Image 1 (tube, rainbow, N blue to C red):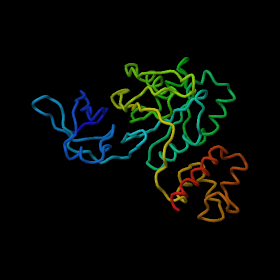
Image 2 (cartoon, rainbow, N blue to C red):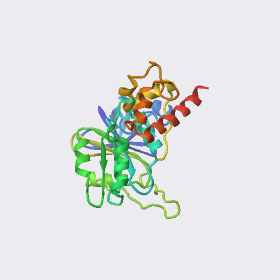
Image 3 (cartoon, helix red, strand yellow):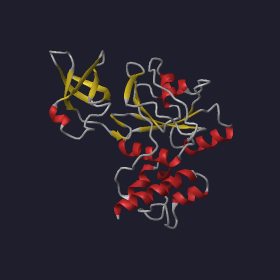
Image 4 (tube, one colour):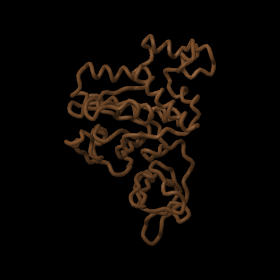
Length: 289
């Protein structure tokens, strides 16, 4: 039989066959491999034990993609959640996630929560960073702004919510799915950072064709290994102006007659995004030395 892993806790996995969820564990040969062999979102083959009705996972089917932090697989869309207020949005962390999405074929969507608390100027600033590159949704859990639009945008897809603690991922999940009952928490008064309220990855069905993955909060993501010259390919806004660079191998940093730097100077490329590119380029170059 084939099912989808919708949760994993303490060595137990919960597999959905589309009608019910069955608790079980992995066959010995899978257990002896790396502990992250089975990811939430994996399509697996399994058998039912006659003695207790639980399942034994016998095989993990090929994945379309994988994201290790948060640890999920077979995603269509990654909803990258940041706060328009506190905790402060970290552009580099967001942009690393968008690069990972570009590399793995996952569609990124940007969500900015607490829109009711932010000024119009702040919301405009955040939207301007990404609106010409990726879909952007301002969200307010107080007024409900943006929730229906986001629900429509992810319809029929397997979707993960990712972002640091305290930005309102669990609140957003509860707004999207009435019976998700995800635990929510307040910001730490001492640090201003969010308390970790989601302790494991779990999939909730939004409808018969839409699945939402709830994930633990995180604040950083290591870039996948790549050649530094590849990095430019994962910034979509570089592609059109990059076609006008004098040199075909231009990496848009120190070369003359660079179409990307010209677009940057003219305000057609967001300076914050370009700064993230420079930081990531330096990071990737260090691996190559």
